[in-house]
Amino acid sequence: MKELRQKLGSMEYDGLITGLNPPTRVDGGTIARLEAPAVLKRGTLLGKSDTGLLSVYDGTGTPDCILCDDTEVGIDEDVPVDVYAAGCFDPEKVTAADGYAVTRADRDKLRTYSIVFKAATPAP
Image (cartoon, rainbow, N blue to C red):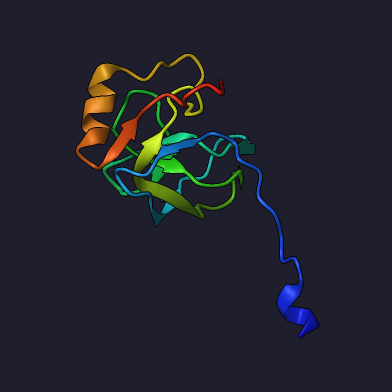
């Protein structure tokens, strides 16, 4: 019976997900290899190319999903990842490529995939 009361792990709330509607849905994707190794952070907005590979969204291609976990991407091979294909996210926690700000048109396109943005309610 001791095993039934064992702590398996813990989770820290980071504020990325801010609502229950639309329901969060996790899917799989593949991030294209990079020119220089990098660690992509949880909450990175990814775009999909015509080939179906994902990359950090910079305004080109189609905004498609949000990265679930920090992920190391190298120069040698494409990397399979878990992504949020739907859900309600804090716009302050979602990042895109350096120097690119997510536009209203990007948000409208993401809404067609059931990805919406809602700021987290501040604590009283």
